[in-house]
Image (cartoon, rainbow, N blue to C red; front, side, top):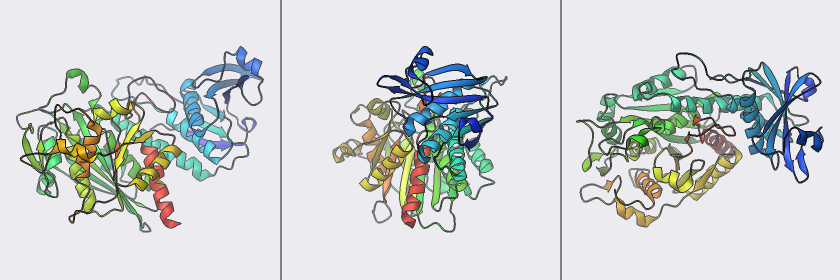
Length: 486
């Protein structure tokens, strides 16, 4: 994770950086930037539109102008700083002199700069990927920005980069076992406990969903528990992540074109893991347990098939009517395990349904749950992080399509397309109750669309894996701990 050094200065004049970046707002009478008149900006071809970049030289110093759109919000500032860092590429240092009015705006600029400096080289034989600035300074003017805010920006960016790296890795390299080993290695120096269950332990522990999905692959499944538990914590958040390291659809085989991008079907687990490590790095006063449900969904003579019945941890049986609805099977085990730990709330995050992408597109996550106050609290964190999510219902009448004549519930109903995202949420809700049938407060986040950016980079989002909802989850977790202490 090549994140530039982040630091703050008062003004561009206080910086020794050879490059200074200014923000341009699209005003009613033309482009506006502090210290520059409108005709000058217009001669550079600027109008203030988002993502617009122009370059010039003033007093022997390279000056970059970047568009902010209609106003300098935290969202436009975060995006503009990322755009500027990408546009400048490999430079020794630069100073971002964007219009920062307060601490929140300054933190957005810091975050954007670190998020924009992302490049995944992967397995290329030559390191031909783009490099970025080694140092980024942010001019904050009179805004009070502490060293803690700078550190937080770096930790949050590192968490997003960690999630992106995992999502971008080739599936023959990031197998379930390799994912688990990576977690053990990366978490070794942090105050977290990592527990890995292999296929035999999963079978003995009654994890029928994870075992069933993984049994068709030569790469056996894993279940990884990453537990950050500071002694002063009085609240506990469990985050369950879907970790299908590659999804062929199993016996219900996907068309060839639909398999492209399926290495990102583990994005939920990557995000849950990144959040737990970020909580540890930030020393948050709340217990965070990430539960990673890792398997590879492959067709073989050993694979589960339609009309098989499997038993989920806790005892409920599921008729498998579609092996390509495998994510909810592994998540059912993870949710049941989470409930057994008796956390205060359970959150799951998954690239769960293509229906989510159809309903909400590629930039909005879908939210479902059984507790309105939990959903609203999370939406506040989403808005604070300038991410995008939309609450969806869980209509009781859709549960009818999951009735099974041979098991407690079916995992899908092929041929019935209506409400596919909601039906998946209804299925998961069956597994958030304790032994007495009492449901824990639960939130489901479907990121099937926004987890993967198939187009060019935009704002602070890179091409490929986006690490979506990582910052929102960290912010929500921090707020959850803070509210408990107030």
